[in-house]
Image (cartoon, rainbow, N blue to C red; front, side, top):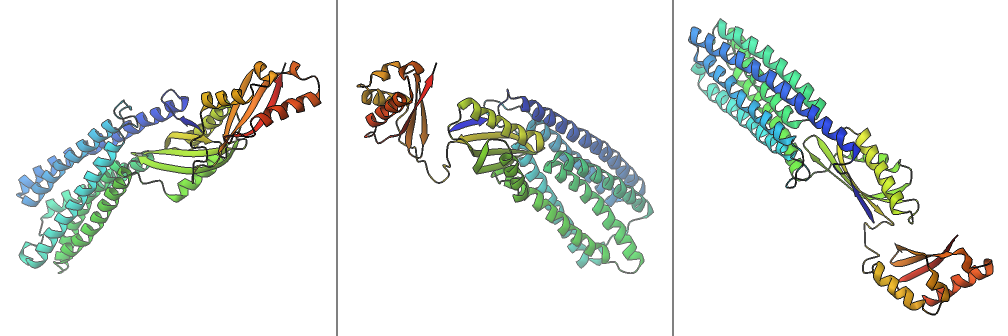
Length: 397
């Protein structure tokens, strides 16, 4: 079995690394823009809240400042996740992004629980139902528009760079917009004589935010426990490998995610089980190149080339290695004069036996009859050897 792994010296690595740098720059840019807008919103809310003596607006402003903390988490996690692989982390640091996503997903769930508890409390205490003034409404409307814009911008970049961490942060921004919408709904409900509308809306919204938080966190947990890619992508990967010239079949196809990347590990069998190591290596290079160049998420591929399907067993286990089998062969051939002129011996381990190719100078056989006689002599000498299959003779000038 030939095993070939996509290494750092491989030309495809440059593409993956370049993509990783671009990805980090995109995440950093969108997070910086979101942080700047959070600061402006926080100052506006606290300033207007102070002027209008609105405790709710001041609290909302402090909440906007707290959003900066999650932005810092995103920036830190993204930076660490995109560090180059090292001796201690040969597969890179992408799992840091997954851990941070679990954290942000948990924050979303906690925010949802807080909104639901507050709304439920207000349902049973009518005097606490929201009655904000006009300035609070204006700032709430500005907050909705700004936060929704941040959400759409962030989610677009998150999908582009395939970052669940950024998706979680986008939804954290949207949770603020939704909170402000609940304030507006509460005022409208009060004006229409339905003071309970905002609390009911808040509970429904809390459920939605919690659902998103759980989905994002659970998806990241899936990465941490090496969950494979979805079936459709697995079918695409399988077909791409089978389309490579020389590949006969594949088995033991395994995948896992790390951050925005997909790692692939596959065993393939070739049309000819006796190809040279260099040809097998070239076919594995073609498989690696096809997957990395044609599938954005795939950045690391390990290809094992098997002479036969070993998924259900190892038929060649226990067979002697080269030095031992060569010693046995020469012992059996000791009475054959042509054995002293052997140029090279090729061994093929197939179906639980060793198949032997002997390279001899063409001068040892003057015609076809002599060639056949030599072949029979070598075969007869090893017929009682249980580990040896067929013996073939090749002639060179």
